[in-house]
Length: 268
Image (cartoon, rainbow, N blue to C red; front, top):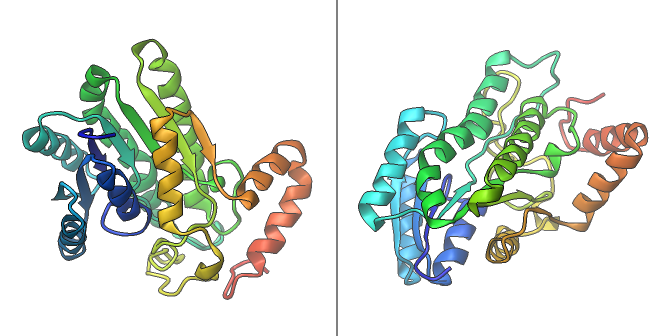
């Protein structure tokens, strides 16, 4: 990955920041995006202190024009684009019967349409350089999670898009990776949206028991180097995907009971 130009959306915290550090410490040139300019600048400063070549670009992935500008900035700064990591994401927690539809739309706009926009504007360069498109999906893209309507729907859609893109790029030697972490330590649950679109605040799960963002980033880096097609992380995640494929009715009950254990769960 030395001297490869890597764009990472949502790169100012969590898995995105860990990916910027992982690729950057291996010699890649990084452009990270984020909506909050303060968080973005702080992330850039921390990465540069580690000797990483990095640029920050304020952008909202749900806005088509921001993605067009992001791609143009990477080319202006580094002269090329080799790898796009579609990492920016948001989640929500509410029953479908209670959630405001605007909340689901917001999640879809960021998690799904944000990937489409970013990929659309970076793809010509990636095709030219025989590079990589990476989507940070989730186990929730294989197994629907109750209380996470918008999140699971967006990740199912993302998996479908990446499968189509991987097939279309077969003869163009473009690498497409669907990366599916299990529960991983990050800010995504603290920034989760409630049924009314407000921020949840505290995580409903024990973050200390999860895979760290740094370990997750290392797995994704290695999969990129090896040009793998799909990776499913954590033993729990792999087991969930396997059981859901062969025993979906059984998994309905298992997943319901597991998610109902969360503090403040909307499941009764």
